[in-house]
Length: 154
Image (cartoon, rainbow, N blue to C red; front, top):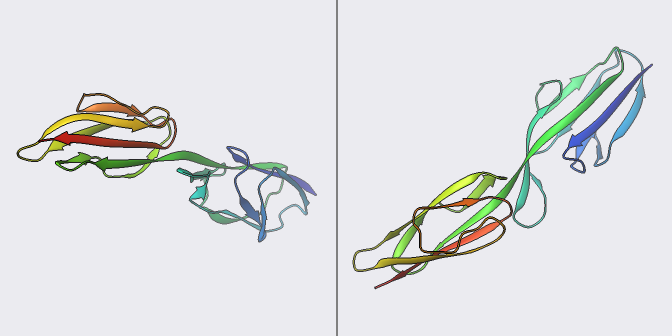
């Protein structure tokens, strides 16, 4: 018999062993060399504006694969956190980048482009790491879901 342990990093995300889904660390006693299927899913929700993307299993195998350990083993599914960046443009211009998922703690440059006859006034931001002020370009830090609105005037 071999002892096989499973967990996720960060803890609390889901994975499956032989078709059974778990969200906490698990330990199994298996016959040495017996085959078992392990898998996870991606993305996984972390609440509003937050998701987790699978990056690897500790044995560097695909997201779903068969294992047949002959000695005690630990398996870990590792995920990276992402936050949603919502970009809005007031009338009179456009903003970059497009709304979308960004890696946690990533620095993102935001830019505003005024249409002819308009000028950029300022950014109004909300969320940890957001920016509120007159600079364009400006840099935000994705510490949470963020909404940025570019404001323009004639």
